[in-house]
Image (cartoon, rainbow, N blue to C red):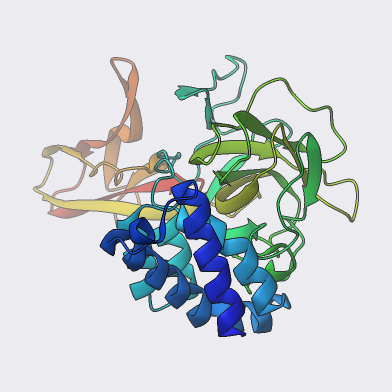
Length: 360
């Protein structure tokens, strides 16, 4: 990378920020420190950008210098100290809003965000307790992973422009500035919706971006609202276009801006899975002609009883009043109750089958 050209860019960035200030003001210690940090960052990572994203290092540096010169000084210092390219980016995006909490895996009621509010989507009362494979989607969280970064690929989204991005079928995301992996998303099949934290970086004017299904009608709702020069993030659930081999989502921006996107999860159709079952057991020695009455232990947490029964090792040794299951004030309980019909000691054994549907 040509150090002199970058240094010139840093100098011009300082001049623009100072509004034509004198050479004396440019020598201010804080401004000098900012310039040194910017130069350090672009020199340190220029070769990486050129190798990983096939973007000339000098072009990347020219684009990044104005952005870096506006970053908070503490963010610049953390970025300069970062040991990985990902950590450097995270340091520069420190102003972005924190990622809201998403549902745990397996919940079919997603949270929808927008305009600073978070609400739960109301379930249809007709939904079956075990879910509806035709209607319900299962939320699957993933480790946050970058799927797009226009600072590294594609450049700024033009004012009143729309750009498409591939999410579900990518083997890696370097072509759109993201990770060199599939983020544990690109190989899972037909995804219904994705959960992405979008961050607008240094917009030219106040405005908004809207992310929506590729090929669909752009909604009126904004995904991220921003002001000029802002770094502003927001979480969004975006449906995907699964009918084409091209882009999955489209992003519209009112003003010219860079955009960063980190995926944190997705919604996908449930898969039929085998039931998981276990058993609880109990036994009791019963004296000759004596009555027995003992419970079979309850099922473990998250399991439901699907059957139960009682027996004796020998044939016709007892009469049973309760043989495994009985209705007890609105609930099914597991019990063994009856009488030893022999002149000797017998052993009564009880067992309950406990199962659950693991889901996807």
